[in-house]
Image 1 (cartoon, rainbow, N blue to C red):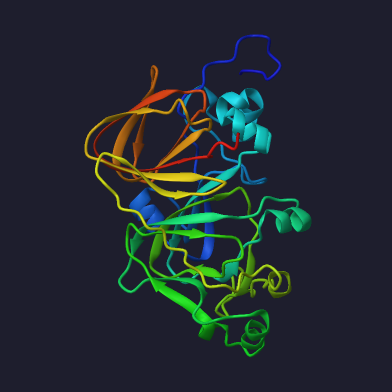
Image 2 (tube, rainbow, N blue to C red):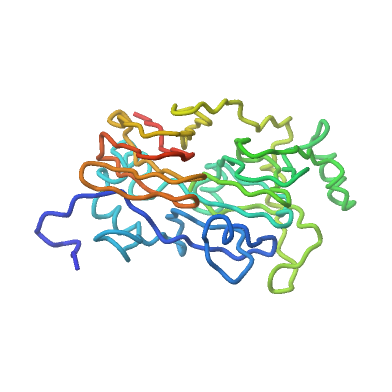
Length: 334
């Protein structure tokens, strides 16, 4: 086994896969197993595809690093793996978390703190996130903000009277829609929705309403109404992202200070010059299959799988007869 302090030259990096971390949830279902091959006997709500969250660190599933945690690879390779601008901003912390989510029932109504609040209260990153809708049953909805002008006093009145659902904005969704969820945005994924989630590395959630529903253990889940009061964004929310997917082209879906997400809807193979992206790149396969190659390393990527391309790579090729990929990286801050 390779030792961290070994004087020998480290092996070359390659496209890395990880074992998914499956999270059973009271609102989860069977679709991640049926449609994305995430095998489990429970009701899986989330498949954490790549994670640096403490206690839920991803483990490599392919190649010579199989069995090693992501955090160890970062210690070994740092800039080569993450990118120089990424390590200058985040050190050796992996800054993003990638998930597939299946909501058989409505998720709790919740929001997330920004970087400043999360750092002060939880010694954590904040949680900015985006969603790409993979499947939506007829009339499936998301909760995004409020359905009227809102302020803290009015909100607290509805909350105290247990009428919060009367002031929430519900938005119908379809496959291929995408949304940017800024910190402070009151939101919930509705029943019948499957999505890919890209977010900051954070597991901080302020739950404000949970449909009077017990958790998996039969106990009511904790609410965080006091913590949420000075974090909620009471302004109008326009979370939906406007973009048009085009075949065999990279289309920008979302960009923020934390991540850029592109959609690649491919009917044939392409070459990608990634030399100007000073970041790791993650590909989430949401349909079809492809073979992604860098130098002499190739990995097949099937629907429901996720692949990390190290930042040291400058070119890659994608071979396919039909696939849709989400391409995600950290925009350079330098």
